Length: 93
Image (tube, rainbow, N blue to C red; front, side, top):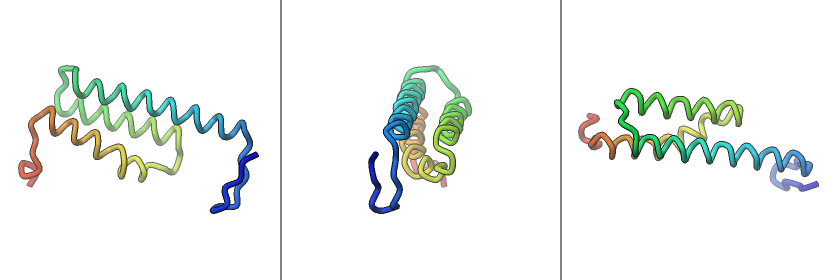
């Protein structure tokens, strides 16, 4: 068993393995989505839909952590979309 001194929670080896499995799945799907954004002939709507689908995967794997996706992953994906479609931040105003 592992202990988290900050939250005073104790995790079993199985729980840790399951969390690591979920992280690997999300990393794979995230990498695949980013590759699709870079390489496939998508419309901007299709690209944003792919990011929306990735957010849903994150919410399914990590319930209650949608805000983390919005803070960490979404900006990375938006930068790829901006780069791919030639969007600059001044274009958005």
